[in-house]
Image (cartoon, one colour):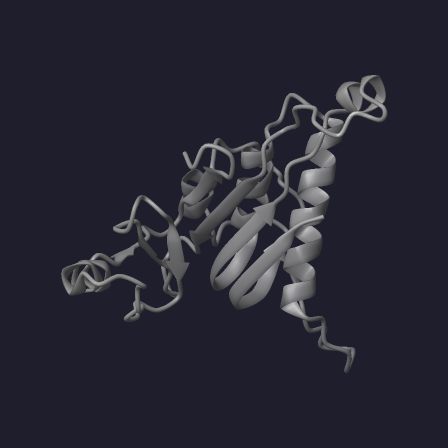
Length: 185
């Protein structure tokens, strides 16, 4: 249902949301608080749990829980899921568009009906220990990367290449950003 690009380590995570928060930055203030934490590697077991699988499950559960509770937005659900992670990370998450239940039942056989737009979510842990950079210097196209790199551009204008390579900006830590894949906003 989703595609997750994960660069990091999840050492432990809050098992439940506990107090409701209004976003990732608010949770960052209490990141090492008294919330119940779960360890990924049990001291009594030799079996390890992959942090990528864990993070994927946390995000999947957050999106599924949100779809059952329409009062809580997808962005907030993903933000809260990421704020429960104790570790160093950056991530990019693609959530594809999907038709609403009403649209899919009323438009049987019609393939061109409106749907909920897809989104790309991206961000870093609240201390910013893993890099995530952004560049929008070529036609407003969003480029995300864990490293600022020289990217060859198919153009005869060498100035365009130079400007692109100088326009990488580090994403501030502790914020989950959302990009609408239909509008680019």
